[in-house]
Length: 300
Image (spheres, rainbow, N blue to C red):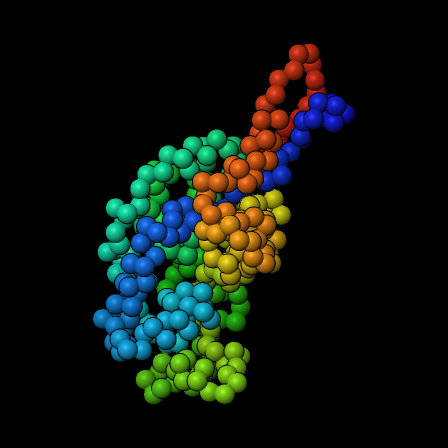
């Protein structure tokens, strides 16, 4: 409206939603949670799946690199296990006491009348525990987690992406060479000259950094990527988010990488780095004498 330009008011803020990763984003890597999680995953591979401990480092690295998470990779190459059991084993023994209440982040989040949503590959129980430890349990509209994108335990993989996300598939899994036990030998595969990515089996698990996983999360939460700021510590998740249209903030380093619109050493610096989040709110609240027909649209 004509009065907006005259008084410097904004009709609408640039962002409708702030989408936050959880681990190593809302609390620092130095907490030791990531290292403990990695150890627990390795122990699960040895104790529950019978994988030789001497092989798990190389195997785990390959699975994480090509499937987004070790869990997704294990399912892809043929290991079958209960998802809840996996999460209970991996997260049930974490040193949650290392995650401390963070009144600074709480104050920042509560000062923003914008939708705020958690988007994590972790299970809901872990997300809730971590948020409770941080003192942020009431700062978010909701949590998009493992169970959100993987509502059922699917043993097979479908080529239909909608089927992968929401319906138990009855399709036959991708055919690939195995080591005789029904497990695809991914280590042997990449030990060959010029290994092909085409021959890798698919995973039934939907997770970041899959663009499909991000698109499904946006769809479920009714989020417009072009009006959303995505906070993440993972470079590949940042880049995947950028490819689907999100504005991106890399957390954990001040060094910007391809795909990152902002780069912050800590989430604590978000107000200094992105002041327009607060400035837009301040402009919408400025009062004037007389009847000034200004419309503001800020999603609370």
